[in-house]
Amino acid sequence: MGLFGSPKIDGKELQECLAYFEAQTRVVRFQTREADLYNNVMVKYGNSITESPLAAREACKAANRLAQSATEVLKRHQEIRHVPAAASAMHWAWYVTFVANSTWALATSKAIEAMAEGMAPATVYVQQCVELYQKAWRKADDEDKKFLKRLKVGGEEIAKIVARATSAVAADDDWEPQV
Image (cartoon, rainbow, N blue to C red; front, top):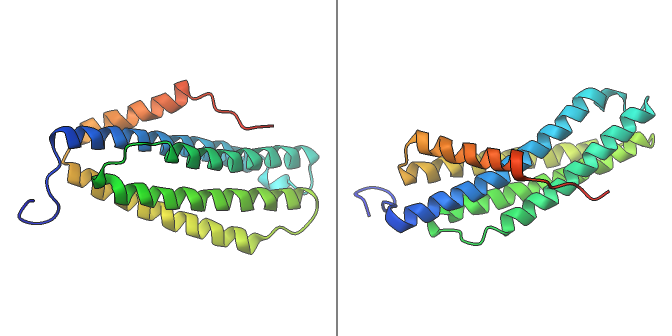
């Protein structure tokens, strides 16, 4: 252990931590991609859900995809088999975030379906869910930063890992929601 703080991570443990970080980053990038798809649809159709059958259909489809992708995110996160001890706080923080994301996505889907059917959505509940999700995301992001600081790896190497994870999700990920 160093004079202050946590013991230095190097050698095999460092390689395991970097592999874990890449796997975790793939899950985060997948979740981000799916959230972006949802947001793009909502920017286009969100204000017209109650007036336009097309807008209602597209918003419901996007919200359903978001809810299904949130379940897929949790599944992918749980499939990360080797979590180094040094990454356990970060792993747990992301798990809490993904559970909150799933809860929010399902609530959002139900609210949009209600709006599309002319009913009042549970906006207070959806707002509470999004606030919990955002709080959890900030905590997970903080844990990410602490973890990376502990690894003492250059920004260039981290950028390469993030780029690989992003490319893998963009190019190799053929996930589609159930219809």
